[in-house]
Length: 184
Image 1 (cartoon, rainbow, N blue to C red):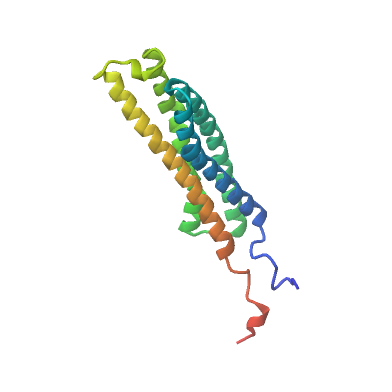
Image 2: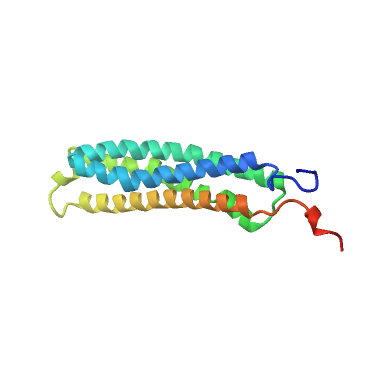
């Protein structure tokens, strides 16, 4: 039976924390699923130029979604942290970790993806049409590698933050001593 000294829930503000954990895990899972399932399937089933176009639109949508969701998750974590009176550096890192994904998504959306589109457009729609040794090929390869790295940072930090939040939900002790502990 719940009493003021021994509540059922160890997290009085758990709705925020659980919402944030669910959002982070959904976000990280969506990014991982897109990268592991959809990208290879698109290139195996569609012509390269069409797959690149479809995936480019998908990555753009994920970037926009990720920026908004990351900012929301940081806000939820900051509010929950403040309500709980947490002051530790680890708690601050846990709350701020989604900012790494926001930075990766924003860098991709604002700089890398537009540069990749400009290179494709300058090449007539397909990078494969450029002659071997063209400088644009090296630029494209570098930007594509950077894009993959940014996507990995976004997916990894969103998933890690989600797992960390889930772990924290169960790892926190109940507030106050147990009434069964007795007095010393």
